[in-house]
Image (cartoon, helix red, strand yellow):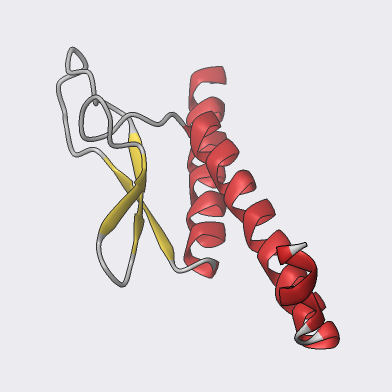
Length: 104
């Protein structure tokens, strides 16, 4: 019964991470490998939906991320996105001063 509970928890976690990725314009893709001996069995990668570009989880083989790694990557991407939003807001308020300040 514990194994079934773990699988259900992993499915819920995977669904939550898929929703987070979708909100960022990304998709979480899981390897279709069915052989547990394959290196990419049960692994994921993150893809930008518009271009089908693999953002994370590509090297050294097609799917390399575990659910923990997916969560870490999405958190990092969210932090970068927040920093960019803050920079754009600051530039909008300060206008050309931001360009001058960045040069000197």
